[in-house]
Image (cartoon, rainbow, N blue to C red; front, side, top):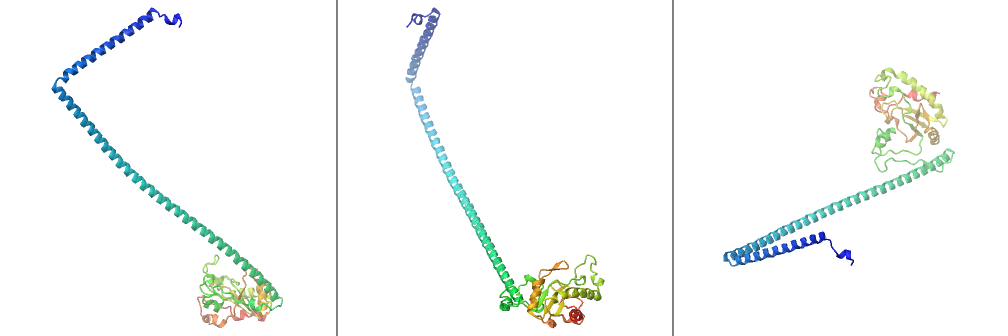
Length: 342
């Protein structure tokens, strides 16, 4: 150690001296206090009342400690009960949520399976529809080929071409369709509409059009079309129509008759029936005229089975007493037989 670090200034020495003196004084005061307290305690212990007081105090403290411990145990038991109830509630909530989740998963799985099933059925239906369309297209092409051979004079496939086509196989035949070749319900009819593949008789629905046959409100004549067009006007328009079409249809073969319905019902209005002498002539007409346009309307030429006209034509119409034209009526016979006088 250096001399500077050992040697202390007077000021620092006095400060250290006073500090030590205060320390010794405090120690002396503390010792005196402890001695006096001990003497006082010995004096108190010599007093029986003080000793009894200490014992009572100790007993009270022990009882207070026991009560505190008991309260602590009681609160701990309550806490355990609450904890147990909370765990039970939590477990019930967990099970409930798991059950809800399970139901949601099952519902999603059910919806997914239903969706997949619908997709599968839709795919199968689409494939089946495509298959049916391909089959229909194939049959149509085959029929067109056989029809072309038949029209060329080959009768090898006549039986196959003439087979009946049923709209509802197995159902009862529609009486209206069998009687007049058409049905007011069309494809919605629950009965069967047997249609021949070949026939001498052709039907062109709604071919002849005239305002007098339309019972709807005409935009020009309203409900007075029956006044605007009398029988002579209807007859004149029909002759123009007849002369307009007869040459075209006779170019396919000899015609026996042409019947035209003068009827307000939509399924009968202006229907034209053309009976050829031969099936081949009717087939030529059907192939050439089907899909063509006349008076801005596309023609749909169809084969029909032979019709008994005396049974099909309304009796009151032939007697000229039918005012409400809802049944089958025919343009007067002399007009229908214009083909014989042309």
